[in-house]
Image (cartoon, rainbow, N blue to C red; front, side, top):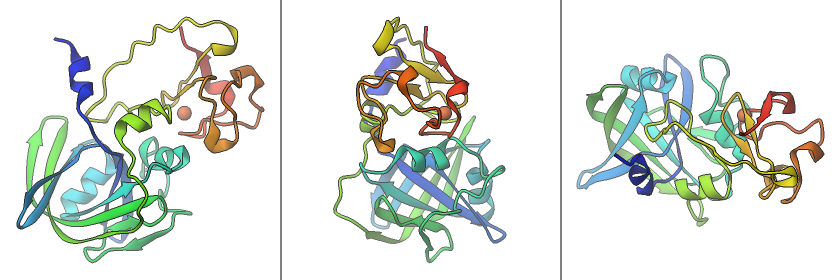
Length: 230
Ligand code: FE
């Protein structure tokens, strides 16, 4: 079985948020799809280990913020590679509370869906929640980010808890300027060919040439947490 076949499926990049006992949490997800138009319903797949899963189970509501292509890696890192058990993910985030009480991210969001859970399917590691859309709106005319764009252009990785996670084999054995470095914390790979334009690092900058103040654009780990990919 060639699991690369599964990677050919197209997805977007979303922040799925929920609430519980006055607290808010959200996480990056790539699986959101419409099921019916009348009533409008969508499905999401959430890992049971994630705090957002607990919140959705308890409150039976969730929101989907559809991210734009211009969303910075730092936003994806904040919601995708950190746990709401350790940090308040909504600190310093511009958001509003929706009708259901779930938060909607307002910056770098092209549209949002506000949903009430009408069904949940246990699928082993994940739960598929089906939500009835009770409110939704378009916030900007920017293009939404696709999962392929996130991987190819932004250099993004999937955390182990993502439904689409596949153990990566990186066989690149590059020399000198093209040497790639892996963040041991989150799995992000620094590729000198791409640089880190979100943070002012031009394409063609070798890892050794990065300033000491540079940190992983996804999880914020320092350069010392990186190792050469072999
Ligand atoms: Fe990292």
